[in-house]
Structures are given as C-alpha cells and as structure tokens.
Image 1 (cartoon, rainbow, N blue to C red):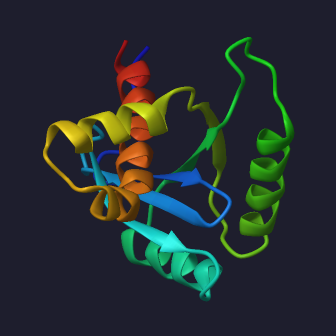
Image 2: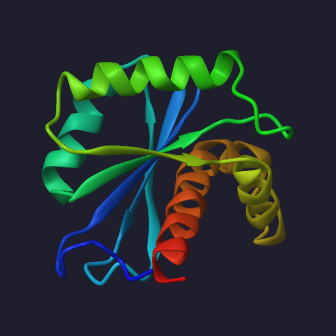
Length: 143
C-alpha cells in the first residue's frame, strides 16, 4: 500500500509513559524517523508537547499503544488512550494508535550497544522508542 501522507508533511510519534513521553518525527518524505526528545510530563509536559506538535506541524500523530504479548490491551493501554483523548482537546490532528510491543526494550538495547550509561539512557530511551514506533509505521505504509 502506498503512503497516504502528503509530500512535505511530517508525521510525529509519541511513546507515552507514566512520567515521560518520547517524541520522534519523520522526514518530509516519510522515509526516516528521528528521535526528538523525551518530555517530562511532571513539568508542564502537555504544553511542551503541544509546542512540539505546532513546531513540526505534522499531518498526523502516531501514538504507541502498549499491548501485551497476547495482543490484548491492559491498564497501560487504557492510560495511553486517556492521554490521547487529552491531547485531542489541545491539537487538531488525526491520531493513530500503533502497536509498540518491545520498542522500549529495543530502544534501551540500542542505547546500551551505543555505549550510553544508565543515566543518559534514561533521558533518551523514550524518544528512541518513539522513533522505533514511527519507523515501524512508516515502513508499513510502504509495504
């Protein structure tokens, strides 16, 4: 299926956690996802997320949906859906949920392999996980 993205419009992905939300964006061609930052939600996080969305002006927002290995939704998925509902009240962009199973684990492993110490990994793992979620979505649009 060909990508339904408009040429020149980025996509943004969010990896929603209990404290931090990882943010990643695509390039204008919709080929490559790059981590942007991890937003601390305890410190005006929603305002920061809205500012990032306005800055990158994405066509749509991809939010990682944490499913169990069985594919079922649990309490964390419900919290993610509630977060998305809050975000819908602040931004006018379509939101797409995307399976995020194992992305945080894979992000952590890639940061370990890159030689990042634990404290630095903690700062970046959510943004890298968001990039993995977004890259998975982008790849599926080209398949």
